[in-house]
Length: 376
Length: 139
Image 1: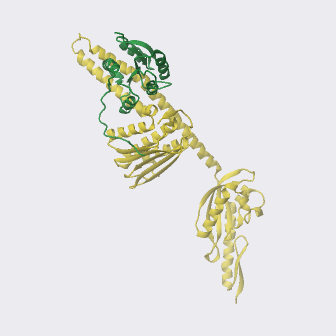
Image 2 (image 1 turned 120 degrees about the horizontal axis):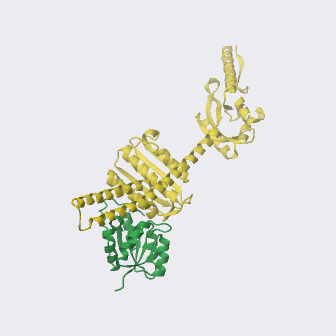
């Protein structure tokens, strides 16, 4: 005996019918029970759930979704739910939807959805296809979370990060200036006085050796002072420009660490805003120091180019490379590089893999954000 | 024989006093200023034979001021007196047409000889170690 079996989706829509044996009816009944369990869970879950059938139309939204969107459930069905999506995001959302249904894939996307109070909130929406009766792709289930607060917190953190870096650099510059402008000048005068003393005809016994030693000590202190001041803020950057400063730093790395850096530059403009120049200099500093510390390679390339109203910086090292996720091993370096670049309105891309070397690319606009222009 | 007329520029008070002391023994110090802009203005009025510049000065650096003076009708000779012991600074000084470059801690021995040489149109630059590293311009 055959009976007509009507198959319903778990939202009550008929998705198919066929003639079959009564035993199959039992399987369908069990399917309906699981459907009810699903509904109970979906309504209790603290997330927003939306189900679409294979015709892309929404057939079910859970209580969480309704609590967010307000209004009537019926308004969400079909393509009604799309009305709540921010107009600028609708294209993207539909595209992801269609792609996932066609390929059976799963994606997570962020978009803005209008809450019942009228405010657009940022939603993180993860979708997955569901298989209905007999394993056919029946449609799509999306679960979504309001992540507006998290997004705002991230933005605030980034802004704070930028301001912290700016404050730190200002402090360093101030200290370097004091060391350089005042202390090293006084030290130079001291050396000069010592020299004058040494030139006197009549010397007590042993004084000759003593003043030579004092002279030497003063000269050593002057050199160390210069080194400290230079590490805090490179004097070449302000006086001679970014290209000279990078060149000088590469020279230092060669003579102090044996790192061979090929530095090339083209069409770098004469005047670069102070904060942009300092940012790029610090990126070069940090990346090349990472090469020495972590990559084991002894070669690197730095290229700086002007293009339109932008500056492009590229640093490559073919050596050991590192895994970008291993943040602890490269310290705060990577994180602060991103913060620095973002705080001057630029972009940074870091590509690294163990054994395959590292590529760092920075792109930054030349409209002054703050600070005076410096010679290039 | 008239003594050479020299303008001095340095933003560090005690250092400037020391330079005046050294230079005044053999030259007439026509003015002593503490920033690059004042140096350019004073030179325009006073027409010195030679200017001794510090490099790092407020308002306008010594390098920029020297570049300005090089374009004037009767450019004075230029000698830099600085703490910067750095080949890039020395090159930059050469580029703006300086005839002398004296490191401050050697002021007692090097400044007056550099001034005399510059007044004759001869150069006195510290020897820079051969740089095993060069960066290049492309394009």
